Length: 336
Figure 1 (cartoon, rainbow, N blue to C red):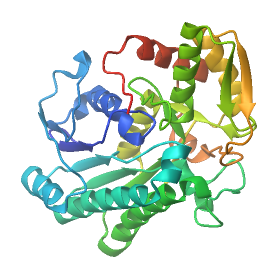
Figure 2 (figure 1 turned 60 degrees about the horizontal axis):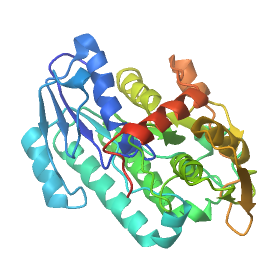
Figure 3 (figure 1 turned 90 degrees about the horizontal axis):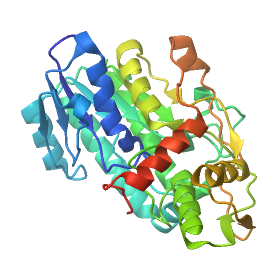
Figure 4 (figure 1 turned 135 degrees about the vertical axis):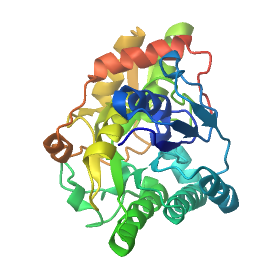
């Protein structure tokens, strides 16, 4: 990216469980580019920039991304040259199952508004952040980018997945029809500081952090977790995703998405044991097998990003310790 450019980091709420959660770290990574420092960062949300990024000249915007007129007005006025689209409506299994229509509508409308307005106003490059849930429920593991739309999706997050697939495909179709340079990245499960720790609607890792911390504080003899603990999952620290996003903006063009992950997996049972250890909980872990497991296995093939020259930096144990410290001490802790 050349000097003195206008960059829009289009984000939603703060939790790293969604791609929107990388917004603080995305800002820091853009600043780390040094000679590529942007002229202005446009952040349409309630961002609190870290001290290391305060030297950025910036403007803040509060936008309802589901309102087409608001989004079109923003792009017509500011005309950002590069756009990171990380906004999304997200949640765990319960949220996805109880708000199917909301998840599909909100995600489809906001991404179409942003991508279309970017194209109409001459955006030079856009990066769309999706989710690994776009891949089929029984996709061959680890999942390559090429397995998209090869078989049935996981039903527990089908609405969200379909919306994200639509955004990815819209970027591809603009490239093919109009010669744009719009790319997409599909992160695995994200976690880190400023996460959403809601007891019902959060993702698995922040939910476990809160559950085990409260069990320790209350002296509970056991903690009950959903399912049987057998599903395999992969987790990526939010700093690492932000670093990859900037890396891809500089080094990748193409219609096929790029997976964002570590290439390492563990069972949910192993994850709960790790979180219990980090939080200092010593009681029993029980399993409620009447609750759904979700997709049996979700491991991304990260050979494409590795071939481009990128790899993750934060190991899971270290990342969970950082996330737990944030849970304990961050006054802005999200519990939505």
